[in-house]
Amino acid sequence: MTLTGTITAAFGRHYEVALDDGRRINGIPRGKKSLYACGDRVTLGPLHDSEAQILTHLPRASLLYRSDQWKEKIIAANATQVVLVVATEPGFSDELISRCLVAAQHEKLRVVIVLNKSDLAENLLAARAQLAPFSAFGVPVIELSARNDASPLMPWLADQTTVLVGQSGMGKSTLTNALIPDAGAATREISTALDSGKHTTTHARMYELPMSNGCGKLIDSPGLQEFGLAHLTRGEIELGFAEFVPHLDHCRFRDCRHENEPGCAIKAAVDAGTIEPRRLAHFITITSEGDRAKSF
Ligand SMILES: Nc1nc2c(ncn2[C@@H]2O[C@H](COP(=O)(O)OP(=O)(O)OP(=O)(O)O)[C@@H](O)[C@H]2O)c(=O)[nH]1
Ligand SMILES: [Mg+2]
Ligand SMILES: [Zn+2]
Figure (tube, rainbow, N blue to C red):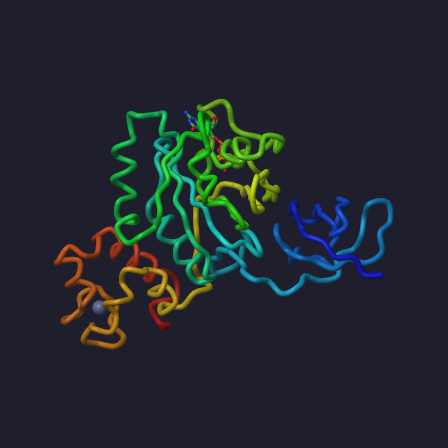
């Protein structure tokens, strides 16, 4: 008999699988490569001592991943929504937000930004200002303090499989513990350790959200410093800049790079104040990487 289940934690070479009948087992992949991710639906061979071989994954509704020239890193499979966690401190990269938006848009995932640690008021205004270019074109920004009250995020989580994404130290695991009282996710308690560059969360894990109506799943993931988009073409990246899209047909040149070309509608929109200069800067940085200069 073939078993089916969902990968609830990915440890590289082995996986925790929640079988559809409720049992939790160890899933062992065949071969050397780890091809599965947290959130994957998988079929498994016979069960021996709470262990079974993973045969394959079922078709994925979505696959959020990042990539550089050499390798791809899957963040989560079958998510329906990305909650991008930033904080008043330590500082965060808005370019990473632009990158994450592109990857999510390509997988048709909704993105919500959480501005965490609102209790640390000193940097609140600066953090809000850094997020303004994103809320300007409709990305929801939810301010909260995971330490005090995570409930502002609750209405966004119903009937979604949400993956928390963000740099290390932003509070993804603290938020997970606030939303799921028995999650027991490790969080970093010594703030000086944040400078060491080490991540507290080392692998992705999926939790069931306790909800009075509907259901929801939450995936906590390790902090990331980079979000490479080597798997996407220039045209796909353009589509991930949602506020650019209505202008794209109006550039004089069909293959306009929106750098210094005459008759560039994106540049004109920046000059007119309808596109934020930061966003065009992010676009140019991302599309100038690697071999992308050649592909459209
Ligand atoms: N003041 C304050 N501190 C917070 C809040 N949320 C999280 N922190 C602190 O921020 C630090 C990092 O939190 P984590 O939850 O471990 O961060 P993370 O995003 O999971 O980090 P990685 O697992 O490394 O990716 C910890 O010391 C938390 O206690 C908050 O709302 N307010
Ligand atoms: Mg964590
Ligand atoms: Zn242009």
